[in-house]
Length: 247
Image 1 (cartoon, rainbow, N blue to C red):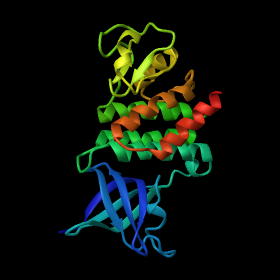
Image 2 (cartoon, rainbow, N blue to C red; image 1 turned 180 degrees about the vertical axis):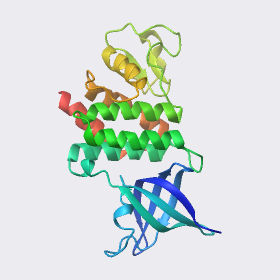
Image 3 (cartoon, rainbow, N blue to C red; image 1 turned 90 degrees about the vertical axis):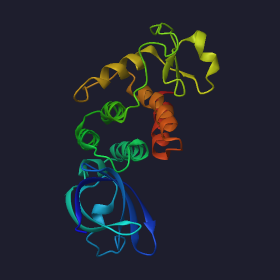
Image 4 (tube, rainbow, N blue to C red; image 1 turned 60 degrees about the vertical axis):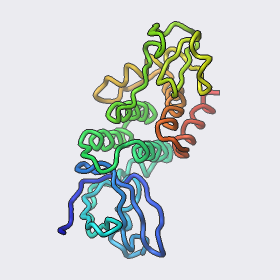
C-alpha cells in the first residue's frame, strides 16, 4: 500500500522504545491519528524537530499491521512565536491538549484543522494571548459540537439573571439558582464571563480585548475536563494560574 500524505499539526508525543516517538496528530484529511516516528529521538534524525508538539508539517505515513509509521516529513512551521514566550507556549500546549482529547479519530476534519492552525497563529501574534486563547477554545468547542448553553438556563429556559450565575458541565451550561442544587459539579462565575464567552464564540477572529478573559479560562476548564473524561494537566495549570492571578 502506498504512503498516505497528510497535512498535520503535532498535538502530543510520548517516548516509545529506545529511540521512537508515538505521536498524536491532527490532520486535515483524516482528523486525529496516532502514528509512530521511528528513530525520532536520535539526535541526527530528520524527524526530531517535526515530531515536537506545536509543529505543522506534511507527513507521509505507511500503514502497518498494528501501527502507522511516519516515513517522511516536510516541516511547514514550528510556530516560533509560541516557543519564544513561556505564556504563549503554555496556552498553545493547552489548546493542543484539548484538541487531542476531544476531536474524533480517523474522520475528515477540515474545519477543526483550520481552527487549530489559525488559533496557533493568533496565539503567536496577538498582543493579549489569553484573549486569543479564549477565542480559540470557543471555536474548538463549536466545531467539536460541545458548545455549552450560556444565555439561558438549560433546565427551565430563564435568561441569566443572578449576580453570580451558576455553571454545570454535567448540565451543559448555565443553571438558574432554583435548579442548580441537583448538580454536584456546579460552580459560580460572573455574568460578564457568560456574556463574553457567548459574544466571542460568534467572532471570526479574536477581539483586541475581552473583559475578565482570565476568568473565562477558569470557567471553561471544568467543561473541557468533563468532555474529555480525564485530567488535562496543561489546561489545569493554565486555569489555576489564571485564577491565582485574579486574587
